Image (cartoon, rainbow, N blue to C red; front, side):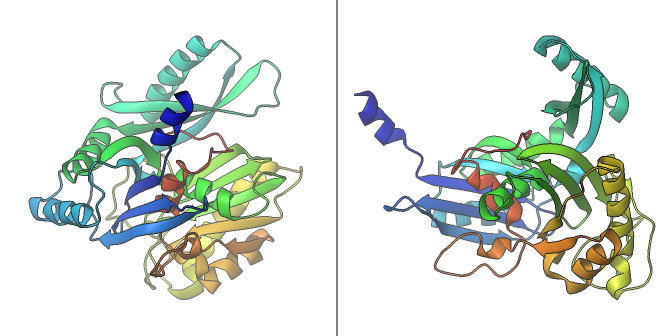
Length: 337
């Protein structure tokens, strides 16, 4: 009887909704009879900012799409842009789990200057080489962001089960589809429209994080660190650069180099930087990262991470596919949601 129940409840569909800055993306991957996973649904709608309620017309369009694709009632993971999170690393004395949770809560409130009633706070243990100390990654996100995102998804006919940071979701997707993430030291960069996140992974474990705020959209001639954008993250805001073309990536590459020096020092450096996100195939970005950091820069094309009837058209699906893939295979790196 137990085996029969397991067969009935076996996961056969994985659904994710990504509230990205440039679009609302929904994807569903389905288990085939041979055990592989194939893309059943993938569609994009105009961006749906979740710092406020979704417009009725946009919600009706989203709901109609969900219904037309037969996804009503499906369990769904929700990814939101990393710039909506506040993130930082901290070292604390070694303590038991209960004390650590309370200390992480206090440290996040103090560092981020937030009211505990207004935010959700999570912490992730990181490797620490200092005796008697432990390292943590702290994350907080406003409760109204969580509420707005989940309300939209539920109103559209889906059943939200988790909130994922887009950068960490993209990292999980890259882990599944790029060799070498579980051995050695890997630098991973996920580039969103308003923030780039650099993560160092050693033997499958997250070691370091640095968020870099800017205008990283794919159009040319933009200013980095635009004053018109208001963010709630503690990312590093980079100096504006008026020039278009390759120069617009210079401050990102230079800050990446400083971050690698801080994280690695005189010890072993990663052999390469793996890049996801809409600009990840920009040759100027890859050339400047390689020239400044001295590391091979490799794009991981999320448009080809899954098979389906129609090809995805751009490398913007890393967060959605990564979030959906959490139901496909157990994660190997420590993450927070």
